[in-house]
Amino acid sequence: MNNPIVRTARAPAEKRLLIGISINVMLWIYILINGNIQNNFVTSAILALFAAVEIILIYRAFAARRSFDIILNEDNLVIDNRQIPADNVKTVFVKGYFTPVIGIRPKGKVLVPYKNCFRFKSDNDVKIMTEWAEQRRIKVAHKNFSRWL
Image (cartoon, rainbow, N blue to C red; front, side, top):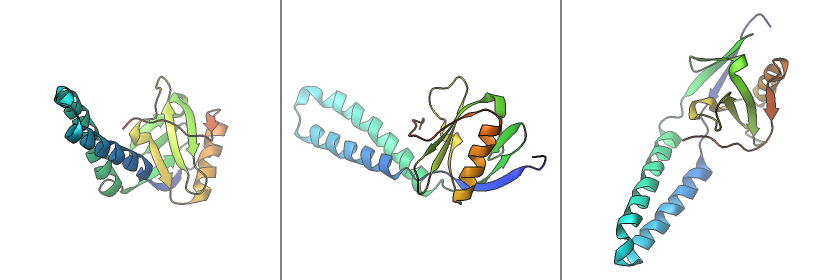
C-alpha cells in the first residue's frame, strides 16, 4: 500500500438528534409557559441551552455538509487536511448498515470528536476503511458510538 487511497466523504446529517432536541425544546417551552413562577429562571436556562444546541445542529445539517477527501496512507489518516497518525487511533466505529457512519476515536478520548465523524459516498469505501484499520491492528467496532457536538 505505497500509494495513498483517496475517498470522498461528508458529515452525517444527524436527523435523529435534531428531532430529539427539537422535541426537548418544545417540551421546555410548554413547561415555561404552564409552569409555576419559582422555576422560570432554571427552565429558561435549560431552554436556552437546548435552543443553542438545536441552532448548532440545524447549521450542521443544512449548511456545513460539504464533501471532503479522506486519504488513507501507510502510517496516517488524513481527514479534511487534518492528519491523524495510525498509532493515535484507538477505535474505528461503524454505525448503521445501509448508510453507515464512520467514527474515528483517538487514544485518550472517551467520545468521537465531531470532525472525526463522516459518511462515505460509496459502501465499498467502508470496507476499504475497515481493512486499513485491521491492517494496522486498530480495533473496528460495528456498533453505535457517542460523539461530541
